[in-house]
Image (cartoon, rainbow, N blue to C red):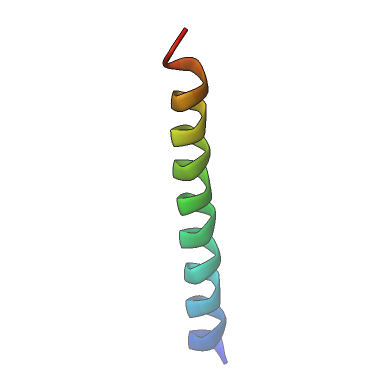
Length: 34
């Protein structure tokens, strides 16, 4: 159960990280052309 919880936490952390990177890319596109 502990290992299962750990892997799910890892997936959540990775998803949050990818979401942040995606948000940064969007922000770059919005700010870039100006």
